[in-house]
Image (cartoon, rainbow over all chains, first blue to last red):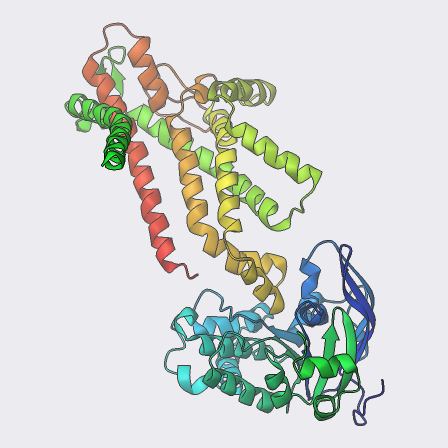
Amino acid sequence: MVIPMGPSAPKVLIENLTYRYGDKVALRAVNLAIPAQTITVLFGPAGGGKTTLLRLINRLNDLVEGTQRSGRILLDGQDIYAPGVDVPALRRRVGMVFALPLPLPGTIRENILYGPRLAGIRDRATLDEIVVRSLTLAALWDEVKDRLDHPARALSGGQQQRLCIARSLALEPDVLLLDEPTSGLDPISTGKVEASLQELKQRYTIIIIPHSIQQAARIADYAAFFLMGDLVEHNRARDLFTAPRDRRTEEYITGRFG
Amino acid sequence: MHRYTVQRVGFALLTLATLVVVAPILLVVAVIIVQGAAAIDWEFLTAMPRDGMKAGGIFPAIVGTLLLTLGTALAAIPVGVGGAIYLSEYARDSRLTRAIRLAIVNLAGIPSVVYGLFGLGLFVLFLQLGTSIVAGSLTLAIMTLPVIISTAEEALRSVPVEFRTVSASLGGTRWQGIRYIVLPQALPGIITGVILGLLRAAGETAPILFTVAAFYLPRLPRSPFDQTMALPYHLYVISTQVPGMPLKIQHGTALTLMALVLSMNLAATLIRSHFRRQRQW
């Protein structure tokens, strides 16, 4: 499958990736090239391996026991599973936002600064700047600028999720992974998150699992359809959603199964 | 109608069962307070015993129990909390960790006099610490460890796993996640476990019997390797070993021990509720 991507090398390149939980195959020989500064959506019915793939790109699945992996994942041409890779440093470059907003205990400011502080940033002014910049990027600054030292839990669900996005952005990652970030949100909050994603792709490479096909079609530059561990189809989003090449993709998009 | 009769009888029986449980506790407390309060004055709490313990105070026993509790805390907290962190956060589920858990559960069921004999063998004789505060504290610490480890592990496990994932996703190492997120959240539970364990240690007689407790030593201990009197053992001594002991002194000693233990318990409850209010999930 050759996909027009422009001249630059892919930001994330997945090569012949197979992944198992015990006997269960979660991903089967997946090849996927993700261009920089675009939004790529991974979509398909539950159990297709989308979340697993996402969690492999920043090695969060290292925490899961009893798994097997073959194949490679390259970030800027470097194998992230090569021996000697600094995993915390990798996770700072590849941020993750989860399906449910998960603020850490503590205030809004403490949430934003958790990552930068662990990364060793101590300078007061720099930290303050990070708070403003990341909250602004996540379209939350205006709503919380007067209560940065209030508990993060006091925010609404939509605000919490944008806080989680801001928290990832605070580390200035190259790649942002989002796993159904709007699944728990109302339409207005969803709209805000989607709008800020469009801003964010100017700087970051975004890989997102959308919570509906409609959302996928709204925000995607590229789309990849996963079915039971197989990458069925990958293309520019406008082509994939208007003229799918695989019958299974077409059936899923038109709502005949899943 | 019949159904309601059964229900009423049932309720009555349950209430009776509750009373049967509560009444003896209240009676014990009441008797000790009534009989013991008369004995307690400034001299009783701060003076050395005199006349074969039939007069004077119980100061060295109070100090001894506080020192033993402190020594137990110093030995048991780092090991117990460390062990709990290992079991909850690092250990994989293997034959070894299952064996460790089984051992902990079983340790909790061992009679305290066995700990006393063990302490005598290991600390007093083999390690040549002598009958000393160090030997007694270490013996009490070993007896306390199962309580501390299992409650602390429980507290750590009750912190949602997602916090660890989030910490990792923000570039935190496993230890950083534990240090900055998990431990602070688990702290109330850990403190509760620690204090419950120490309470038990403070009130035990058998483990200190052969390892530290002095029958009659009307002075304060001079070093950690000195013997000391201690409240539970002192109570045992004056209740059974010394003929003609005034009842007042026995009850006064019991009241002092009870007040000490209850105030620690109260402190535990206050600390726990203080931290609970700060907890956020």
